[in-house]
Length: 200
Image (cartoon, rainbow, N blue to C red; front, top):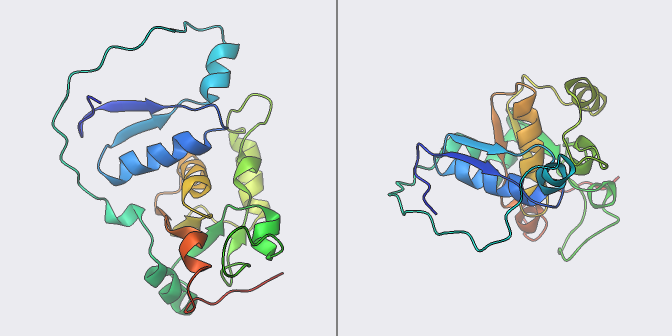
């Protein structure tokens, strides 16, 4: 795709940045330092009346890519378990309220939340009309109401890492510097027997 570690990559989608944020996070994890999201995504681009192509794009020239995993961007089950004892991480659940409370099990063996996790649904970060991230003032207010401290080391999670990537992006957008994504998320935590779970 013509991407190397020095590339500037802008990612967009048509689903409130949920899919784009997943790609943004994957790129950042594997060492693409300048990966960004297009605020408003495809809907915002069209609403602004900007140029659109419909022809099949020409394949870019291939470029060498040396994957360099950024360990600090990825949280693991072991780290979350350790954090339940030493409180080293602020855990932020980006799923729906029903998933967080345990009333929506999805396809998981167990439902509920990680003990002590803060909850803020990922879609609440986005203006549904424009698909843009809410203003800095609004985001600050949402994080404050949810008890999320921007200065604390934080691990976000959802079901499979995508919604958690939106949360990670918003936290970094607001100045948080130690944000990791528990990418295995509830797909792992809710389907093993050695993880504590609480229901609301």
